[in-house]
Length: 364
Image (cartoon, rainbow, N blue to C red; front, top):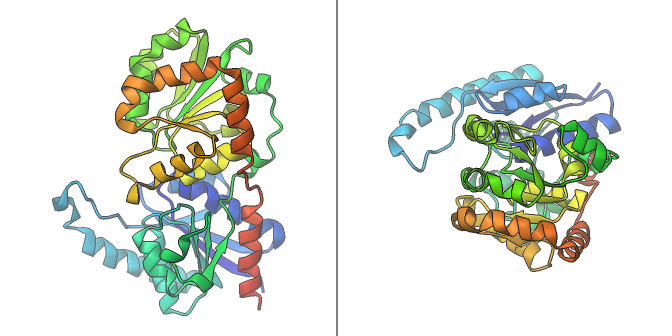
């Protein structure tokens, strides 16, 4: 009988892309394996998972809203409803194991699976574990983490340091810089800045770039600018008629963007960092300050300390970010040092390590 696995979670690319990487690795090792994703209705996984070739079931779940307590009134009802939906999904699919990758939907799925004694696995990509994962970790079969020191969140005997799974297209990227530049309709003779605030965008990064958009042309730079949905229309207005700017809410072929980029502006989420280590790019990090336990700042600082990246605080982005990336674009020696040092931190086989461990555990 073919094994069946549920992968639960999503919300951002930082959860979705490693989930797909793990699914692909499982399929490669055991081609007959059946994989079903479970995500939160209305979140980006409902679109991105089918695009990756996998089936997904949506459940009605939302997180706790810290900024507006009144919006949490319906939360208990959603939680009850999501557990009933999960019960139906698990009863119908009969999984041999459930993997949680973070995001709202992972909690009810793993909690229900644990109550039914189905083996559960957690992938925690960040250096600070989320509260849901900490609660689920007590009964998990194994917990895969990206960095050491995670025993303060999870039982030490269940932890395995694997690093973060990176999309196969990025690990095996053979696209040349010229091909990348041409993909975005830009000029191979010009230095190229890639701006990405992650899959959902980043307000202060976008506003900093928008306010100083003319500085790029003045310094003979061109821009690949991923804005996220909220700033996309504004960015299109700002860059209208500028031949040195390509902009969109989302970059579907990130391997072309990385190939094209000479320097990068990025958030410092765990998955962004994992990919930037693999592609060896000089980066100015702008940590998202409201991430749990301010873990993005901790992530960025650990790279800055190794001379593997630069950092600008989110609240200083409008004032300092564009000047910093222009300076970096002109300093070849600094670029070389940052490339070399960030490349030393790359892990390229985390997806396979995680997949093998899961299969070994359920095939016993």
